[in-house]
Image 1 (cartoon, rainbow, N blue to C red):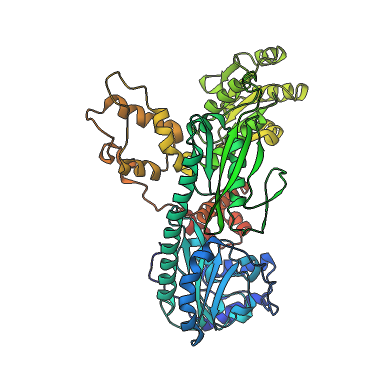
Image 2: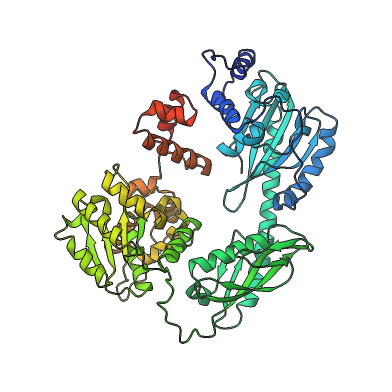
Length: 592
């Protein structure tokens, strides 16, 4: 649901109009122009947007959108009222492509795409980026044709996960001093009504998908998967059979089939599969030697809403060695984790060097051991640099010469001489069965940087636990010690689970494992773990709000710019195209 917030005091529009003219003509700006507006103008110039845009952008081809399907009944009830006024109502998708518009607001007829790359600063782009109501007035816009326009936009959120699906905008003539925009209540109410319609429809389609899954899984031992791009149901047999790569293929297939095509629209499947009619069943060969999936689209009210896949193993499954293809069985089914582990499994097929990077405690060593075991390296030489200086780097060459795999942990702590020896070894044997784990921290020296550059093409970065909170519920039973006979396994209340999912976990899985073990060993009460039993920092939740995907991306860009410029904030701000004061404010906001 969107939330109504008080709009901040806006700058006077006349001085801002003069500042915009100075910006467009390349003259110095006066004092007092808000940093965020200057940054928006600069982004528009960087994207090559013409401020005097006169020709409308090319209309997008007609598309069937789940958002538009749900929103249309709500919007069409409002259209007659808009026709007699001086306002317009615009619906966009998550890429800010205009899906629907009505009314007579100035300037709207010229734009079919409201992204900043096409039209510069506007309220829809701002609402999408901030995930909250946003207003843009007159000269705050970059385009000339919007200089007499005031607009307010609110994001439309998916009811099941809070993902931004699009935006709703009310545009009108310039309303100087209006706080909030007169159309703010209309935009909020419309978004709320659309979200309610989305919720009602999602519950119905989820029920249809579940029914189709249960029918297919009625046969004992059937490996069945049902997916719609948002939900995933797996039978026990499918969970044990499918690799992350195979699941990813089925996810993409579900997204393709369920993208809203009608009966006659071609559905181009992934992984070089031929185009298929959206209503016809077909067979799909899965990667990693998993087998063949018989995929049947699931329909509801004339549209394909997802797929049910019945997986049949290869005919020679009984004699096929299980170590032939790596299978990553570590807990976690979130998109970031599945992407990382599938890539690692793919690279680990060949016994060439592989680099696993990530924050401390993200599971690099556990994944490395799993990959080695899965491909048949059952007796690797394991060297942990964190335990002390390397006694004799020559043992590495001896092990590799005998085709014995080498697992080198905490490569960031290697002495320079040891890194030089490792670089020389890789120069002689670029295909050595070497697996390294690396935790970024202080800037690496030249020798270590050379090693990292050598392994960059065969490296995988594991996501931090805060980037995959959906996996926490699956990790908990894996991390809990085996219960004492006569005692039930550790379970959790919903309130406790939510607190665990909101905690940032700076120590990642290692920190979570310590908490779980401590509770399992020392708690004196029976029943599920309650929120009150959690440590204070976990129970009370993070002091700051959870960042949106756009804010996480911005935070990452700031950190990367600071790293590239050696921590020099002035140079980092210049590279980002923002004022130094803005950078300092964002650093405080992101607790950096």
